[in-house]
Length: 164
Image (cartoon, rainbow, N blue to C red; front, top):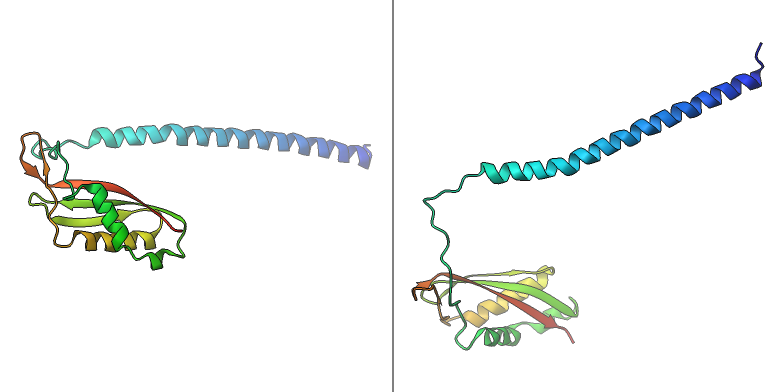
């Protein structure tokens, strides 16, 4: 008869072998799952890219050869925003603040829409208010295509503010 000690040794060896087999299966399963995720993403993107037909009746957006501009230039517009921005509200926000101002200008030079996109929502809001004040009752020079026709244009201007 086997002693209790020999039985315990056999059990522990069997348990270690079982653990190794389980670990092998687990690693193999994770590898297969990772492989599937990595390579299936490319196939999904390709599937959507090729399944969406192009509507040939919709013309492409007009190419703007001469972009819309503020009357004294876009740098003057940014200086006007500096003058109109409420610096007191920006004291506690941070030192270096960045946003992008996006303006939609129609064929007559009117500002149709102003948007701001940046990391700080309060700063975006203040810049948008200053941009609205800066463009009130001011006609922009409309953008023109290569044929010289006035077109609707979208102007993107980066804006940086340094709190001192």
